[in-house]
Length: 400
Image 1 (tube, rainbow, N blue to C red):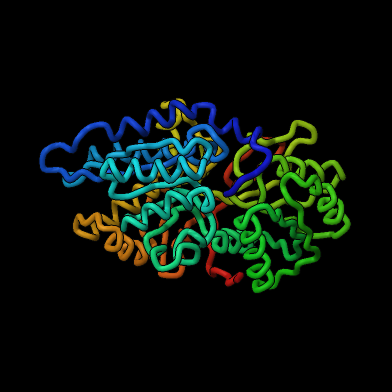
Image 2: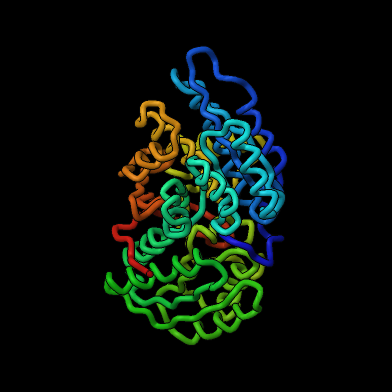
């Protein structure tokens, strides 16, 4: 995700921001035990700024996952060293990257937005190091944005093409054969999710009855809602968060429009729920269910560990941090212990349904952001959320 003008609602996701950072930071304060190889992860993250609601839960989950791996691994000892980019100030982010590299970081982790991440990523790949994001959701974390050196850049978020395609698969499975689309034009991620849904939904036999657009901060979501309301559809589809999400949902419901609404991971969680009207017939796809009903016991155990640490996640996005650690660990083992960026990247692009916490994931030479994840489908009814299904994309639409 990128910059937005309204972050007050998301602040509820990171009430324990300082505690989370401290939790992860303690994982890297000691040298590896004898006979174990140190693997230093340098993490440049936004501790208390705009990206904190995404960065901090991922960092907390990664910290817990590192402790678990260190306890079980006979060969490797993972260390996380952190640096606060102070609301992703470009100069500070670059300084963080250089500082972490100076502390012998072999791999650099960065914030969950490709624009904010760019100064860190560029320093990492210029030094031949692997650059990892836990939850960037576009195809730009790789050669598409960073050129030849971008072969060293990857994200463990879900590429928008995969997410939008999975949403289309779910809609068709529910026999929602007509859809009205509303695109928040603020973020590439938002736009790409809806574009992918559009292409895949029509390929599966669905019909688009209306296409509207709006943008966070432009006060035009009401117009989009009004236009959608005038077109009968089996489902309304968007990808959004921030202040526009409650405005979009409550706007339709205030018009007594009961049509189901389907959103991406951006709309996960109940922190944004409106009290009047209550959120009803609202669906989203996400990494994991934080509502006590995730089908994977290991995911439920991770959520319990985060809760015990005072960092209960508000959305399933925390899983990207744990999965990034799992993925790097797998790549290192497959590289027979090499920490060279190009060697690890060569292993990552060959990931094909590799098991990580909560799912199986894939990369390729084209896609350096995760595809193939089994999404949890969450339904909110009367402000109460629960998992109602699982879905995976079968096709990644070409939207460029």
